[in-house]
Length: 353
Image (cartoon, rainbow, N blue to C red; front, side, top):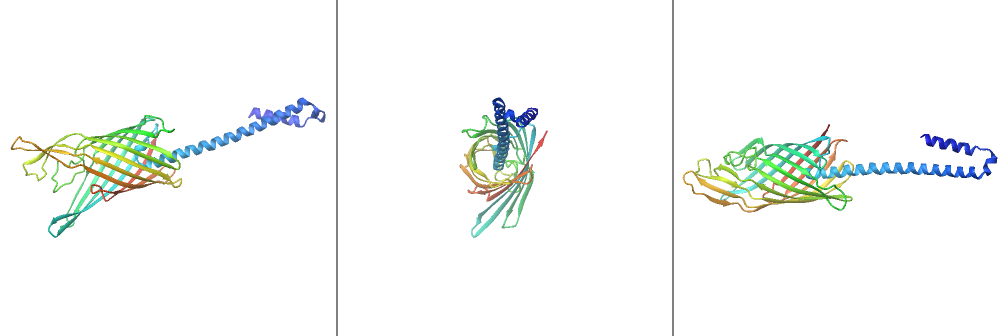
């Protein structure tokens, strides 16, 4: 500022110099130098203004990309240091099918599942985030033949895990986030209940799931996808499939491994709204069940067939305020193992400290 004031005073002195100085070559040279300095200062101001504008645009674009990926799922973004993340999840699933009970009689069954969960995320480093998921489950199973229904409400499986980004994002390589999660069956196990009277809220087995998720910007869309592998630990149990009074029971459950694949893309319709489409596929290998009785030490095994799950989803992300977003997703099951449809709502928020 002082240097600029000095230039203005010097320029004023030169422009108000007496007429005899106008023919002085040194004075004219000084005037030309001052004009060049003024032009340089003006260009510097314009460049700084343009740089601030570009920087603001880049920050807004990065924030918008993060919102699109966050709407697609938690596996594609990481928490920033200096804050703690919380997320409320609501998930409603509806199953329905017809079952042939006897000749000329078909029974319609419907199942309503509601899951409320709270997710806590904490970043240990800029590229490493810890997470914990605490769900609460409500289920209702209805039969059309006698109008009866079963209901249960209890905690589900706790999930602990972390996400790690090995490489800095940007460039030709897609942004890669690796994850590892452990599921703890603390809810009501399907192997500890009477299946004719009760319902389970847990998978009943411990499991580990490893995943690799990728995202890449292809302006104006963002493509994303991932691979996953789940391993289920053997579980000792005493499950009477034919009733508690039956002498035969399952003494050990070995659930088959599961392989998963997902792909999709997201697009920002406006500053406040984005949309995403995705597809998920998973293949579950055969599960083995070891049977025995109390009357004899003899054991035998049965196996369940390989099964597949396929879901198509459409979701949106809404910016409901300057600091709050809401993500809504509708999933449509494409196989008999999947729910007819699933409605999920996610409300993430952060605590800065």
